[in-house]
Amino acid sequence: MSKDAKSMIWDYLVFVIFVIASTFVAVYSRFFGPKEKTKADFVFAAGKVSMAAMMLSIARGTLGVRSFLGYPSELFYRGSTMWETLYGMVLAYPIVCFVFVPVYFSLGITSVYQYLDLRFKSRLVRCLASGTYIVRQLLNQGVTVFTPCVALNTVIGIPYWASIFGITLVSIIFTILGGLKAAILADVMQGLTMIAVSLAIIIQGCIEVGGFGAVFERNKADGRLDFLKTLMYNIPVITVLFSLSWVVGMVVYATYASCDPYTSGYIEKFDEVLPFFVEDRFNYLPGILGLFMASLFNGALSLNVSNLNSLATVTFEDFLRPIPYLKGLKDKHQLYTIKAIAVLYGFVIMGISFGVGLLDGVIESSMLVTSATSGPLLGVFIMALLIPCTNWKGASIGVITGHLVTLWITFGRLTTERPPTPLLPLSADGCTNSSFNDHILKPEHQTSFWTVTTTTPTPVNNTGNFSYDIINTTRAIPSDPLTQLYSVTYMYYSLIGCFISILIGWTVSYFTGSESDLYDQELIHPVARKMANFFPGKKRRYAEKNFEDKTFRGSINLSASAASVDKKNGNANLAFAQDIPMEQTEVYKTKL
Image (cartoon, rainbow, N blue to C red; front, side):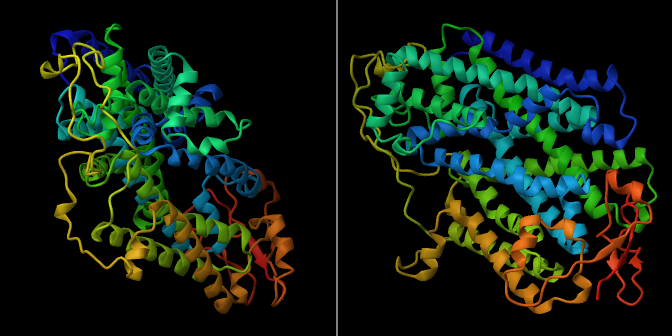
């Protein structure tokens, strides 16, 4: 982009002010706000954040930096296919609310991984699930940190390594100073800003092309909105937030439909199209480009802080706290340990971010790592909640097998040469000296019309100066079964991993079941308990529990099923629950 530094003074100023303002939230929280006296203050921000702020912070996760920057370019060059993931999102909310949450809520637990501990009476299953979560979040955060670097490199010229290092460093400082409370407050500021910028882009684009009707018709005519033949109109508010970036993409495409910036050589990567639009069309508003860049930077920053907090907490609670040497740590020392783990993860994420350029764009990178790791994780929770006969042996083997299969397919996909991803038709036939603003227009394009050599660019790597050439690739015969397997879209990896995990886990559990697998029936969904009576085989039996302290039922953690059963005398295995001091062990008597 050709905007000089002098003309961008307001953009630089707004960028710096906005970043400082967001960082000030953490500084204020650390030195002027309520002090962090316990680990819960840092991890949960208990009692310090309003419900409205919490809701906006959660909703902002739907409009993250990956969707903010990646979805418009995805619609522009590949169409609205990924917009249809909205169906899964809409379906997921009621499933979670009416299937999973009621069981968790009735147990009074605060960690979904603790539930697996209770259900399977196995720390192995809990660690496999929480380990999967850690790996998935680390990979996703690598994509999140890399995303704003594309725009920062394009507009300001900051090298990728400098942007990645800067975001990581500020995130670590933010985490040490502020914890979850600071991240939530920054999310509020960031969420409102990103929504405002998105609406400004939509309004400006509609003005450019003659209204939203013209935007819709142009996108529909050029094949960008095939799925809107089927889109329902009565979907929740979350749909609006998720769809906002796609609508931005519609507006950007309608503006550049006859003169594509990528085809005409004004951008080098697909993900640059939105920053290019802001720089091109908002020149009359000094500082708007800086606000846009700051929203990307702070978006990655706040998400990174939130996830560093979560990753460090899960790692400490599930992997380090059970170690005998660490059991006696005071609450203050536990907090220091969690912060140290967060710092370590910050640098791990920085390293992962440097490798994201190997993949085709931020959206594909995000969807690939999410799909490749989420299937077995979903599978183990389905087995725990909805399949009564599954035990820890089946769950463990199922999760491990699901991961091995999905990893095999993922690496096979990267090492096998496949046809390039097809792009929708693009055009530069309508380019004139008025297609872009004067401060953007190249000197050789000052004439009324110019000719571009191609109208549909070959879809090569477009995320940076990286290439698949560094990976050993093999060209296989198209009819080869392995090639066909590796050619399956990564959107199905979650389904494959989940199905294999459940199939293997269910089968192994069927052949390895024993009396020691008895557990509290409240750990299974009521509908699943009733349906289990219709399956062939022995009738499912559950453990009976005698409460020694009946008032403990409403406390934070419930360990009725966490204790391992001694079949001879009905006593609980106290060693099993030793890593959770707040949990009171109860006594089982098996019904034989």
